[in-house]
Amino acid sequence: MRRGASASENRFSRRAFLTQVVGGGVALGVLSACGPSAPQSPQNAGPAPTAVEKLNAPQSISTAGAASTAAAQPTAAPAAASTQPKGQFNYVWHTTISPAWFDPQENPPQITPYNFAYALHDALVKHLPGQPFAPSLAESYEVAPDFTSATFKLRQGIKFHNGDPVTPEDVQFTFEHYRGANAKVLHDKTERIDLVDNRTIRFQFKSAFLDFLTLYGCAASGAGWIVPKAYYQKVGADGFKQQPVGAGPYRFVSQQPGTQVTLEAFTEYWRKTPNVKTIVMRGVAEEATRVALLQTGDADVANLIPGQLLDAVRKDSRLRLAPVKAGPIWLELGALDKPDSPLKDIRVRQAVSLAIDRKAFNDAEMGGMAPAEGNWIPEDWPGAIARPAPTFDLARAKQLMTEAGVAEGFDVDKITPLPPYSSFAERIASQLRAVNIRTQVNNMERGAFYEQLAPGPNRLKGFVIQLSGEPGDAAARVRENATCDGTFSGLCIPDVSDRMQRYDASTDPLSWCRSSARR
Picture 1 (spheres, rainbow, N blue to C red):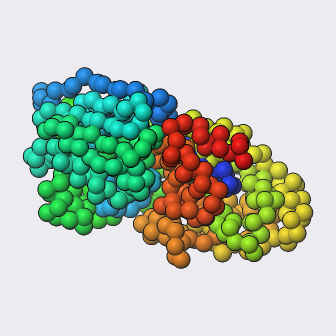
Picture 2 (picture 1 turned 45 degrees about the vertical axis):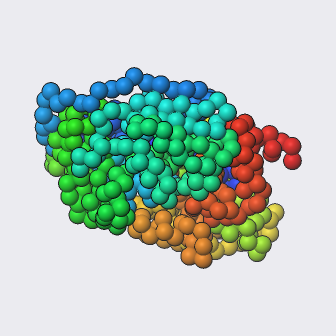
Picture 3 (picture 1 turned 90 degrees about the vertical axis):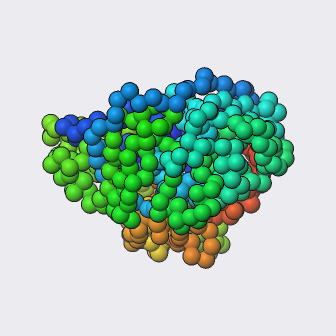
């Protein structure tokens, strides 16, 4: 299933050897009818109301053919402020707000930071409505037909919030010091960066790099979101998180770590002057409180309206429910590669899938608005395979458990959901009890969740419910979540890593499938 997403959340993928929980994901957000409007300019199309992860299909970022053709766009002149920004936009977030999200250098393989990046920062190339790889800080770019280089030309007159110009040196520094999602493949495949002139940067690759534009130009990594070299070196990574400086439409004003961040319009933003002067983002974990803030007019948009509050929202004429498409929700079954795990038996994994009532999940958590799919990589992502959602068949699930010799079931240490989606875990745990799989919900803070999702001895055990709307393609999602050295991989299946290496060495986007067919 897929959850609701922001406008910047697009195509994403999942893992074929994991059990998919639900189908698509609708993000249910609510907008207050009496509050000021959000900025309508394309650069502010990042944050959008969300509410459930994986029942709806996300909007698509199509990369087919994009890397093999030159893409030139007309140069936009720096913004001239004909009118001054006015008013305040109050956006209520459904989690605590981590200062780490303000630094694209450490971008994790998740979409959440982009709700802040689209306001604070700007990228050479980024997703905008109708343009999967829209030139932004770069007025034009070209990827060589043989995928061995990529050249970007900066716009004239662009600057960071502190007044420093955006230069090729900033682009080079950002890439060379990038350490977030997909950093390894980006660095391993790049031979050097040439500063051709005071506006032109060329990436030279060691061999054909088919996925460069996908990884660099959309939210599969933060490497394309440019930070100011001199300022970053002066304050360091920790200082940057506390006082970020970007080149986006809004500049940082202040933060209350975890609870609130205040941004103000950057009137010299190259694309256009924002309409709204101030954006205040607040982290409010309590679901009923988010709705109450909308009803009192203290919030203009609130993320994540859970199923039990949907009727109240629908009945309030002052509010507007905004389901938006997003990334998938999937259930990761830990210990698949442990020889003594009951989950090692494919019949047990099939039983888990058949015991999950996706329609009931959809109806209860997302008001029935999310489509189900049968793959953890949405079918509209480049490289994904469309599969029908498995049917709910409890009788067959019990039969498979019996055939596998575990009719009495077994205990799983815990089921840990991405915060704050605890109701997802409670519902899935309840459904699995019908086939005697017993587990307890383990709720965590989001920061701790992602720390323990990384491979290693402290990696989360048991079942994990992941939700992700990070744009990219199927390869990007597999690379980060399903290979032996992936950022968030919980398993090591050599065959998967081998196929990923074959893909990365190829210029054929279907090489993964072809290598599989030959085996």
